[in-house]
Image 1 (cartoon, rainbow, N blue to C red):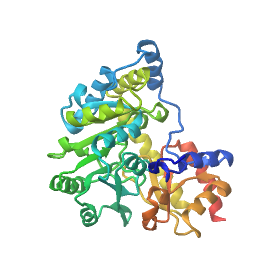
Image 2: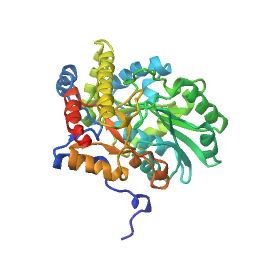
Image 3: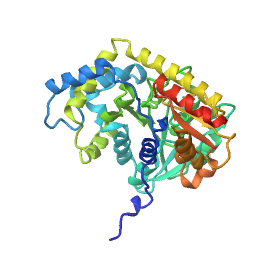
Image 4: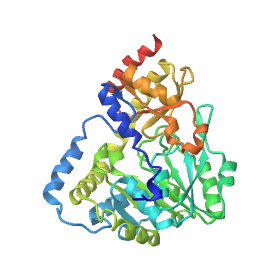
Length: 387
């Protein structure tokens, strides 16, 4: 039997493999981006309440009205007025929101620009929609990741359909500045492109403020904004996200969405709506930022003391740390770190396409979304690198 060519290059998820290796060697897992602390009490209370009050039957594919309204209230201060019934789709995590957006926008052979390093699902999602990924590399310069605008311009061809932008950025922690976004927006308008703006870490920024791409002049009608409850409330297993887009794109996205999962589990939608309503009133977002700031600083100090060249992230879940001081290639060192030192981290080259991996820095990605106790345990083990 001949398989579809679109899936032949897909390999096992490296995050699943790394977590299994970490479990096998009882390693401190700073590789996979899931929080390791208890879910906030108000989130658990919302989950419990939702089991009693939500429908346990099919819901409308677009999402339940309460959650659509809560997402609109969350994002309107960033991007302006939103029609929740016509411009929001509730999805099975941000990953499925991305798939629905690409299914609505990409025709076979259309090119989609991806900025590397990048979240690992972007490339396969583009290919699953018969699009062609085109890669432009961010450049590490003096502790920051810079977008070379000339390289971005050079990547645009008559077949280019759009760009996937991720800010705060995974894996680098970069928060794109307003000037950078305005430069991207100018190219988007000049070449009649669209942007999928992955903003799942929008509530986790440090020194640099988050700017939603759709808030820029003339960009609201060209942008699909993606978010995730899992990242906001430390419940990554809930798999609930959303996409906000102009009505025409939303209608097309919903057309794809209804034939993939049909709808998102009703009581999880209800719980997420309750959480968003409560978080707007209880100061949760400020506390979340403070927690991540403390963890970022603790992990950055830990990695620097262990001999890594750790870049200070401006937002998000992760720190990228160079391993120039250590011999061997990045993947081999990452495996050594798990099996011999007892700390798991992701090799940054996996966030590049195989065709562009030569541009990847010799570095690892470490997760900030771990408790101070976990970071302290990692620090103790990383002392072994000095011996």
